[in-house]
Image (tube, rainbow, N blue to C red; front, side, top):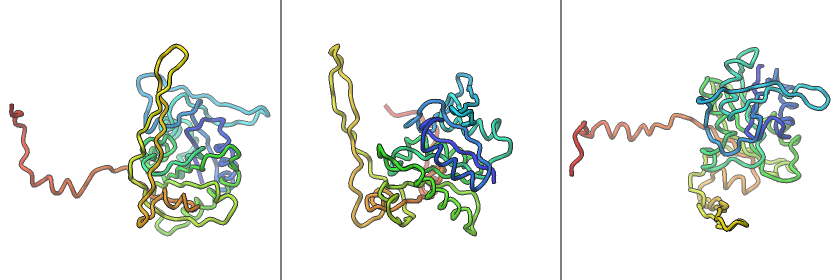
Length: 258
């Protein structure tokens, strides 16, 4: 199996290296990741400036992969078109340092890379681990590889797009995998205003994820309960029920009333 591995934490991120080691047990892995951290860039792409890519190696002279001076979506686009020796059959993005759950999937460069893979009709998985300074990426990578193998073994094996989140507690116990929807409640939009030594104001975002409703399990509530979450995503954002309703509207190119 041909696998493309990317992330948004950068080519030197420990989660990327740990996941590569496990994915090599499944197939041939090509790594194409951002040269620098691209967290929170969403699905941005580079098109007004040249997109640079170069091979990078570790201290032992072992090849790390392609370092791309662009976004996670750039990495997937360039790798599928130019860098991979064969077309990938699987795109994996991660392991991200920090969960990508709730509406964070809209901001996440990790998820955007998986979505870009799905654009090409390739089964794609975004993987994130709850942030911990002593994060056990190797353990998370073993869990991830096992779940990915189970996904690929399903009889309905057509191309799919998935978002996986692993709470840190799941690394110490046999956590269940819950297939759940994304929580859609907005995050808090609070900011703390501070002042720098020159008297200029600056702001730190302090908003936190809301408590999910108790009667509905979502990725946020499942993660808080210590479960691994798996969410099938789609990038078709058309509100199809609304389209059907709007087709009955009488709307034409008339001038605005004053």
